[in-house]
Image (tube, rainbow, N blue to C red):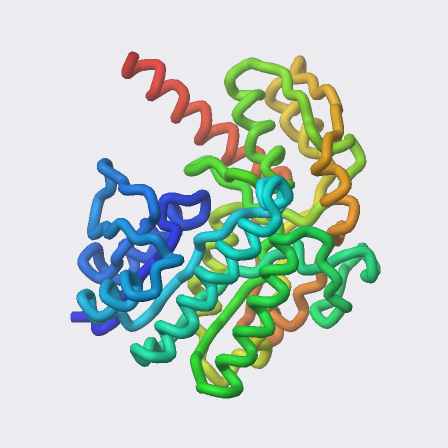
Length: 320
Ligand code: AKB
């Protein structure tokens, strides 16, 4: 029997919902405690409702289930965060500090804290942005992630807490929907195409951004968490790259399957956010330290996205 008991915070989210299933598959249904602020009636496995801003509730849950590892995935993302900056800062910082402090007090073995390409701002070279480029985030979300990276380093240096982190690019998957991010268009666009609709894109046609397919993002997360401790040399957060593309390039790849698919470009406030982010990311440190290697490019991702979404929509229309 495994001694590993994992708490996932933010288990209903885009990444959390997929990660939980993979962790259940790897470690056993009974060893994964999924939690979220919203309850989940249809959840298969152990689920606890948790408000991660509540320190005592988090601590009680960890003690109750003898948790050994935490994956903390709850946060307000870049675009939504700009609509209420102070609330976003309070929420993101409170949840993250609760996780680190409860983990320290309850002697948690390992903590996963997600960071983002949003930690970068206009001080960088936007092509192949290196791990140690200057961080001057322009969104509250990015500021909270940059601060979180420093706290991760601090908890490691001061208390030996084994915090591990990735700077995610935009994550694209067929299993779940993102919410409140600047890269969300790259999921929405596939849904529109498969439903036979055209798409109105909130970023301009030539806005290149780093992205990653869900399968690669989940694999990277678990590989990082399972890597030997001595291999983890970056204690702020690792850059990881998957692929880079513009809205025009993703729509061309969709047009291979749907030649009449059309995109209308109507940039909104999210354009300004994207314009300060890297166009591509250098992930040499992740490759060197724990053998990170992405497997999907735009072409292979589009094939899977379209196949899977078609099946999903066929199944849901058959149910009606
Ligand atoms: C967002 O767009 O805010 C996120 C991210 C890149 O962290 N997907």
